[in-house]
Length: 306
Image 1 (spheres, rainbow, N blue to C red):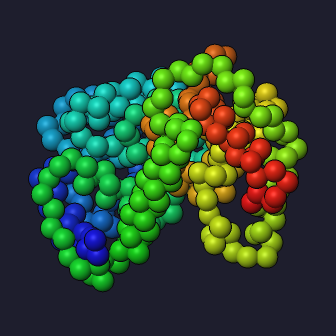
Image 2 (cartoon, rainbow, N blue to C red):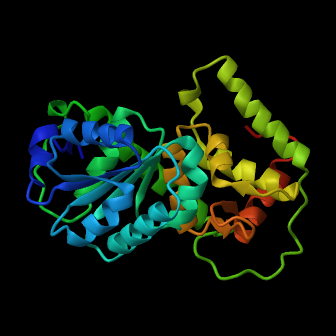
């Protein structure tokens, strides 16, 4: 569809239910306010993390909550995130949590696979796109305008294409001989061929070498890069935290998080809480995904898998 929200027309429809802004510092609050005001969305209030929970309980109406974190806040942040994830799950509002890259692991653990939109080190376009998704997710009527009228249309079109690409990738993964989508716990598969860690590492190295000669965006394929990284880790008996997997995806962290969330929802990846650190989550291949990858490598043999 070649129509999207125009910046002023679409967002102004949500004025009756403004955005509550929460920040871990004055700088974080200012950053969030800039994004929201640039999108012409009314702000219900600005609160530090320490008082946000009380304000959230008193807030009569909000289309979304935007939480901007540039540092860890301990118990206050944990309690706030727990309340917000519950509010999102109950359909009271949508929520965006914007963090720095070093906070990806603790925030992923705290959000625990919820429908909260998590973005990390996002640029202005990604931030506006996340806000559009959050505000648009509360089911209110919206007006459409020609795409040329929206100065953020290119990013929103890219976001739409990205979501479609995720859906297409997952459809291909779930319709082949070895379906990995929401399958029951598998029985041990003795016919799965072995794959060496060095074989997978060589493929990953070859993929990264392409950036020496061509622009990286020509080859962005986060789903495949994450699959390869997790397979290598599995063979080597290593555990992969969310932050490391985002780096392996070779795309901006926000894009990687979006892919990761969808792959987990589809049963292709599995999240495991770190038993020794509640602030960290590991990601691993689902058993069916691992078997499919190993059979793939066995079938292509010595051909270049890039």
